Image 1 (cartoon, rainbow, N blue to C red):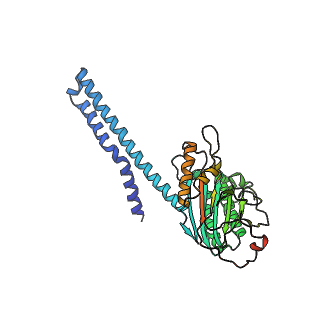
Image 2 (cartoon, helix red, strand yellow):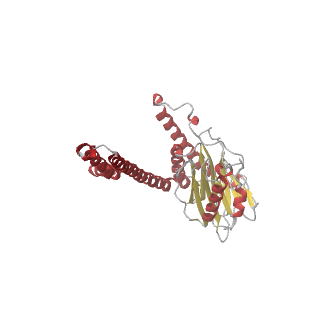
Image 3 (cartoon, rainbow, N blue to C red):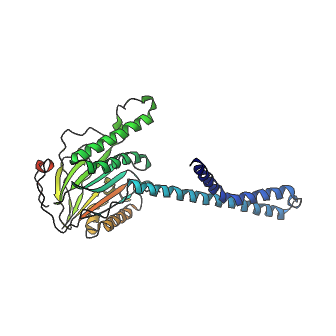
Amino acid sequence: MFRDKALDAEGSRICRVAPLAAPVVWGLVAVAWKVGCPVARQPGMPMRVADGVVFLAVGTGLVLGARRGLKRELARVRAVADATQQVLLRPPPARLDGLSVAAGQLSASRGAVVGGDLYEAVATPYGVRLVIGDVRGHGLAALGAVVAVLGSFREAAHDEPELAGVLRRLDRALGRHLCERAREEHPARAGRAPEHPAAEEFVTLLLLEIRADGVVYVLDCGHPGPYRLGRRVEAVPVGEPLPPLGAFPLPADLVPYPATRLRPGETLVLHTDGAEEARDRRGGFFPLDRALAAAAGEAPAELVRRVHAALLRHTRGRLTDDVALLVVRNDRVRVPAQPAEPGLRRTRPAPSSH
């Protein structure tokens, strides 16, 4: 195994220097010709012109070779970033328990495909559970928090019967990440928890559960609320917001808020604040509600594409924050009657349609 790794490393080094081999050889030949050939040392304008042409060709070859090497290295970096994107923000399944789902992200970091936004959707015995969040900052520096939160959600969403239990698991996972990061950045404090891990970063987050009857329960940690697309575009209430994860401890009593009922044919759009805060050259905010209204009849994947295209037109491709969208459409033919469940369903009456 170690021999294979050494061979791979050697092969990588050879690939990086190969484009420079020909120009270097020509340069050595030119120097040898200039030093060793009596004709090359003769004075006069013709020989000066010849020398200039030879060394200009060698320099051009070196520049072009280096450029090809950099392009190949950039292609490798982008391939790694694409693989990271597929692992962290993998595309959600197109169908989940009768719901059509699509998601997408635009990164504010030039050349990056991953950033500080996160999303996921999974079907569980308790309903389809969704999460969308925004790590303080963007780009590669925020990936650690994204990994911590998404990894915890993908396990807790299936294990925890209560939505509040899922949120507490996410909070603990982020807390561990912040403490580990603080110890790495302040090695003198090794062995002791940092006094203020919240100073490192925090995550705004929206956690949802869509049950079989279409009722949507929400826990909101300082994140923008979703939009519901039915006969018109409506902002969905999310109840009293909780503090962002990592900033302050969660309260002892976590009661999911029955936000709305998603009826067959209706669409729910979750987004990060980069969508509504994107500005044009004059400082005007992006009209997300109007963009959603214009794409309301589209399938979720096309809706994501059209909103992203409108965002890029509005900002002329100059985003200042990451933008993520998670779109869910209820394609269930009918809403089955469900027996009352203990716990969450008894805490609040189910809402009527808006």
